[in-house]
Image (cartoon, rainbow, N blue to C red; front, side):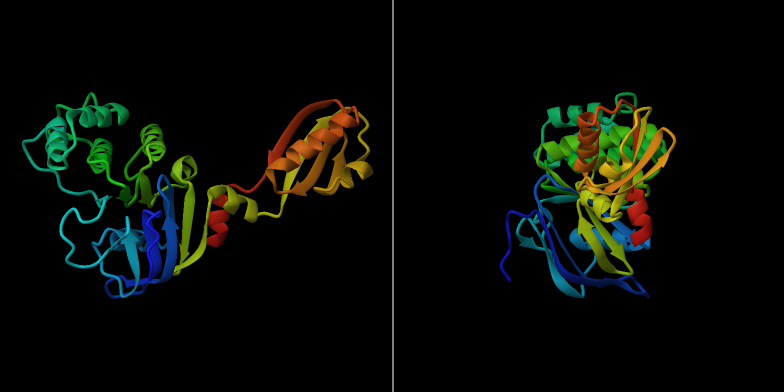
Length: 304
């Protein structure tokens, strides 16, 4: 089977089992450079299992996985795959500060001190860099793990539960960090405990239900496919011709309640512009406009 080296991660027909139970069946998807892929799985452990399989920490019983063109297989020497993997709360050595530990990792990976400074700055760890690792709180530990995973400039970063133990403010820090990695061409495959993190950073969502891929698409396309119609509420004191508005190509129907017009249109980004264009040409004075459509959380709720 030929490998597409333009993909940093290729998962082809992969099956794998959890100890004493079911697992993944015929899972396939690929991740291009600079793609941030979220695995939304029910149960969540299936997402963790997939992360372990990609990183070579769990064997597959069928199919194959390639990272950077190299097939993931038992017995690969350390450093054979261009990736880092962050899984579980991990264990930190005693008697070492945050900066010392990150500098040691950077040195082992051939990275420089500037990368350590950048990680500390971008993950808001200035106040913690001289703390012993064992004295960190749970949020700081997660941020340090993420920072360590980015050192050495891996092509792919795998993270199980990216927002583990993080409060909303810290999630925003991580979101900015991940988006900076994406712009630099790094790929990431992660699981998350919140949909908010998926909405903030991912460019691909792999939805796994009962061990199989239910959907794999961009967040935008998943939202658009999750609902055929969107509702556009237009507030206007003008006398809008409801019949003519209903005849606009993207409009299904219009319901009027006094000065409020509920326009049910195709769930496409262009629909709002089309409806506003009609109202502008009709000379209608629009005082307010609101749109209501499915969110990524709505779509995942239905799929999972």
